[in-house]
Image (tube, rainbow, N blue to C red; front, side, top):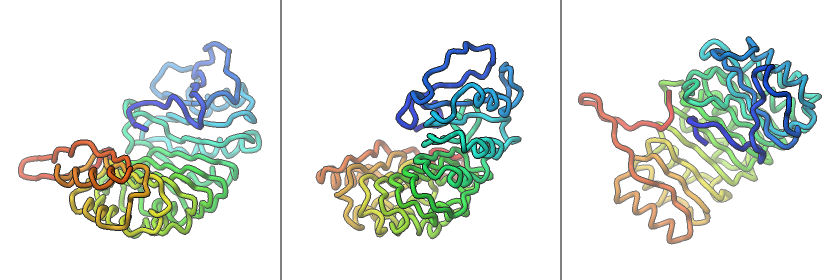
Length: 319
């Protein structure tokens, strides 16, 4: 999933964008056959002057009981509008969204707004209002809130950001999701709000709160070596089928911890794409695990960034 392009499929369904203009053709697909995408371009020529007006027309034209997957793109101008208006609108219609199983809040491509510009809010009301929800994806970490919750049905949780606040990381990792199979966190960097520490991940790494977890992605971090070292000894790893530590600043130090820590040979896939390993270490990781049948995604090492006399490593998605 990339911040540079829009989804073509979500929740196992092809994506259909609800027309922003009321003058668009009235023909709509069968309600349950598509994932419905709504996006209000505040700078466009659409008839609606606000997301609320687009939402009102959508909820009036579509039988919400048949909607299985919902994607929300832009809802207002960058910096000036939080997702609270969207969360409130969806929750207010919960008695009509009886079949809703998947929500993507903030499917905003980089061409529309940088990921750090996306103003989120407390997204936990979506979980409280929809006890049967199975997939929740949120893009953007600014102003994001995620207090500790319990949800019996959630199978996939994905938070994409250039910087996840520590309270959000602790909230996610301290929650109880007995059905969760996939957890992905783009942790980001301090410059964009990522003030988490390695200890904030303890709940997820213990394995106790997510007993059915099969995929774990702890990605896009400036402390990727610390994360790798923690993962190398984490109880959660024994139950995983795939592990993703990509997009961050992984060096030979973190890779050494991985190859000398607990066995990873039970994994089907290990993703370390966007790293800063030496060629020798990259080959060591690849050889060690591929010989045991693990698919290793590693690619070439990223180039060190340099400005005047300063050299540094960088995460893949920040601003």
